[in-house]
Image (cartoon, rainbow, N blue to C red):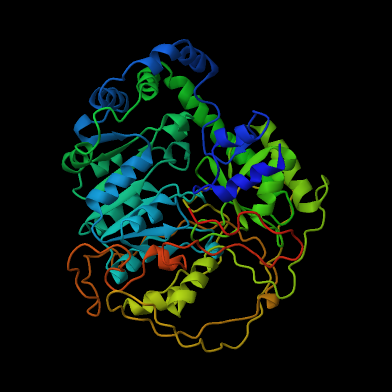
Length: 568
């Protein structure tokens, strides 16, 4: 594959160039795709042949109306059509949810799917980002998330289950409890785009519960689990009033003929579809075990059709991505432009074993310079400023707000503690899910981290705002030099967060007195209720390019491609 294809990562506004763009820049054949989270086993070859035989009619004629296609899907899923709205991909539905139902602020755990942070930011809303902690395996503690929402006075809450990119899972009873605790919010969105791939619970979806509640929307994807991202179709489920409000804004023919053809094919291929999901789940366990055997590579437990991995010390994700693409024709998702992540993390889509063996061989050669496992992993260079996981969020906020994420919590007036790093047994975030690991691979002993005396933070620099904004006070923090940190040992997978005590999910508490009440929609670029816009959290004004969140100082790797691109 030509070396110039890596320039596509710097020239695209999306997180990765399209497969069509990559094919045009190469010899016409695309790479092995570990980037786009698609079901590799569905549709079946026979289904593709059937669609190919109907291609002329499919692309020549208008599809049926969206109501007709929606009614067929609802018949298949046994859902009332008045509670469903189908969209041209989940991003279309996210866009309309933002325009119609998000008035001033939205809370979402990060890292997550970028449209949940970027879409509200683009329309001038405040985005309250709850950082998932790398030290706890990126598990979402719903009790702490609820406390964060109350402290910030947020009006819309989003949960992705499983979460993208880490695959963290929440059990149904915990999600329903959270929905009821947030009953006074304008809206609660449960994004279940990857839930079909989960096997931690027999019936994990909350669609039935959502239809009975006045402020809950469940978002579902079809392209991901049906293996048809290019068709662009998805749907939401809510009570008739909410679903009807979104449905009334959608064009009559917002769904194309391919989407119609696939929906009407599904009732004849239910067995093949169920088998494809079963095979993806088996492949996920096998792939996790193979990747876990690579020295220095950390694999987080996942219930999606992808795995979130942390690269060894000294490995720059954009360089690993580019070398895998140019030298091995393998496309991976580098996560340096995801808020709450860094260039040390990759998201790798679950694929058949033959492709995984090719990926493992490529990683061995790129990371260690050999195909022999057990090769030495480069050590961290002295004085190199590494950022990993949610530390990047705190660093970026600190640059604009003076006190980082802890300062934001203090400024909100609630004293909300950040999720703490606690030892956890080796089970997944959903509970009962063992961490897949290669048999016989020794686990490293935990290592202590040397501490230094706290040093006072410099006085915060005020952020110019069109309206007066409360500024947080500087908070003394532990600030050891980067060189003083040895590489953290891979942590066992976290246990499922325990259900919150009754007090944590009690009746909604009033907003803190120092938070002024909303006076109407937030003007573009202006923080609502004294918070920060998503652009400010990124460390930009919303117009200029975002700074790199990777490791620009790594001495053992060449200059990374795409370090200056806008986050997406």
